Every structure is written in structure tokens, then in C-alpha cells.
Length: 197
Length: 197
DNA sequence: CCAACATGTCACCACACGGTGACTTATAGG
DNA sequence: CCTATAAGTCACCGTGTGGTGACATGTTGG
Image (cartoon, rainbow over all chains, first blue to last red; front, top):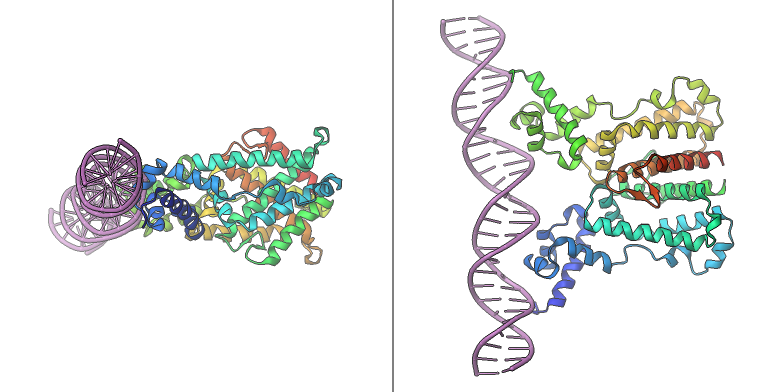
């Protein structure tokens, strides 16, 4: 209850994460966030000039997205020595694991799929930039960009992101059990299958 | 203004489709539907016992999902003569085209990704059954089910469905332009690439 | 010490939503 | 023709939302 602006701001930012994890993005609202933070909602307007900016502050603070290093692993050179298809396989599978450990990020991805606001646009831009960075790191010489392989990688990333989003509400998709590790192993296997062939 | 229950019911059902196309599933509500239908909202309760049942009536009426024949084409035997990978390619690409022509279906898919209600569950079940039917038709002898290929097909279907959903709100994904025919041709090419290899 | 300012509290507004009861009016069956 | 019933209209309620103005209280610099 200390009269401390910094503290109140942090409470609000953390409350966004709590609500995101507990209720999903649908539960995000001025009243709900303020309630979860144990703080008056008027402070959202005073300190952040409204909910969008608070969300932006949350987005900038949390580690929404894996770093480029996290998906490339410690030994980048080893990845670069692989044939192009297996480089892609490595990155796609690593991204899949990274996202499975970030429920709030999946929540935001779901949000991006259905809404278009300041936060989702910002985060989408960050991710697009991230994608370009990864490609640049994995394929250093611009001439060898294997367009088909990259497009396929995109499609597979889109695919498992969608499955992660759906898993929150639906138990299965097309016969694949989204709630069991076996189901996700099938998905990984499909990615390997596509990249090996 | 004729005093005709049948007519009013049809107006309401059609209004659901209009709102879906114009405002998306977020605009679906008792007030909005009644307003679009030019009908009092109390009739939604009287005739359909609430919005969920009205949505169900809409879902049963419209051709949300392509028929099995639409994606298999007129000559099923010709498809069956193809090698398994190309059978999958044919079906996946046909489904992609079929869905691109059904904006309301894409809207519902987006809804399914973020909500869990009577309508989305019903439609999800219909689609799961549809998927099983297609597999049974394309791979008549149960022994030869190529599990990896099917899982990959699932992943690709999930992928382009996600891209269709995102296209409504985002102009691009991972460097692929979702608003141009060239971008979608890249996606088709990726599907062919995966199935040919 | 005291005044000025920042921090926090509270009550309130307008609005849109889902939902319902009471009413009027047209239509059809005896 | 007349009455019962279905079809349609309207006003209203409670609730939750985003948003704001007015107030009280703690902290800090002159």
C-alpha cells in the first residue's frame, strides 16, 4: 500500500501477464487489470494514458519471443554447416519448443489472429523483424536463399502456431491430439519428414 | 412487414451471414443481428430460444465446408491412381482453393481459434468427421495409411488456415504477402514442394 | 513548518449488452 | 362474425464496460 508510483506501475504490468495467463486476452480490460493489480483503474490512465500503452509496456518488458540465439542454439557454426533443409528443420523445431514454453505468447498470437490494435501490430512487427534476422543468420550469403524451403518453413511455423492456438480451446485437429505429448511428437515428426525429403 | 414467422426466421438467419461477412464474428450479438434483420430481438428468443440456436440454424443451412466431392474432384479414381504424396497434395490444394472462396467460413475458423461455444464445437465436430471421410475416400485400404504424410498434410492445412485467418488482420506473415495472389502462389508452391520431395 | 504537488480513493457518467414482461395487432378456425 | 392465438412492438431492467471529475492524503522541497 506504499504510495509509490513505480511500484503501482509494476503491479499493473504484472497484472496484465496474470490475466493473460489466467483468462486469456478476452479478459483484458481496464477494470479487470486494475482489480488484479489491486490498484485503482484511474492510474492506468494517469500513468499509461490508457490500456493500449500499458499493454505496450507489458509487451516490451516480458520475453515474449525467444531470442535469435535461443532458437539457433549455442553453436551457430554447427547449424551453418548443415544442409539448408536441415538448418530450417533445426530452427523450426527449436521455435516450436520455445513457443510451447510461452503460454502468454501463444495467447498473444491468438489475439493477433483476430484483432488489430496497437499492441498486436507492434508485436507483429517485432516478429517479422525477428524472422528476417534469423534468416540472415542461418543463410549468411544472400544468394543461396532457398525460396521454396523458406516458404515451406513459413507454412510449417504457421501450422504449429495455429495448432498451439487451437489447443487452448479444442482437444484435437484433424485427428491429431493437441493435448498429448504424442500428438505433438507427431507434429514434430511431420516437420522432420518434410525437411528430410 | 408481412406477419410471417417463416420469413422472419429466414431474415434472422441471413442477417447472421451478413454480419459475419461485414463485421466478423465479434459483431455477432442479439442486438446487432436483430437490427440487421430489421426484426425485433425478442423474436430471436421466441423462435430460436436464443442466439446459440440461431447460429446453429445458420451453420446447418449455409455451405460452410466444401463437400468431399468438391475437394476430390469429379474423377476420384484418377486421384486414387496417384502416388500417396500426390493424392495428399491434390486434396490439400483443393481445400485451400475451396476455403479461399468462403470468407464466412474463414471467419468461423477464426472464431473457433479463440472461442469455445456451442456453434464452434458443432462445426469443429463436423469438420473432424469430414476429415475422416476424405481420408477414407483417398486411402481406401486402411493398411496403407501413410502416417507421416497425413500428419504433414494436417500441418499444412493448419498452416494455410492460419494464414487465411491472419490475412484478415495482418498484411503479411514471415515475409509472405498475404494480400497478393503472388503470396498465395508461394504458399501453394511450398505445399507442392513438400509433397514432391 | 507549511504549502505545493503527486499519489491514491471514490462516486459517478454514458453506453451497449443480453434478456424479459406487457402490450397491440393481424390472422385463422369455429 | 368473433374469439383465441400467434406475430410483432415497445419499454424496461440489471450488469459490465471504458472513462472522468472531485476529493482526501501522504511526501517533499522551500
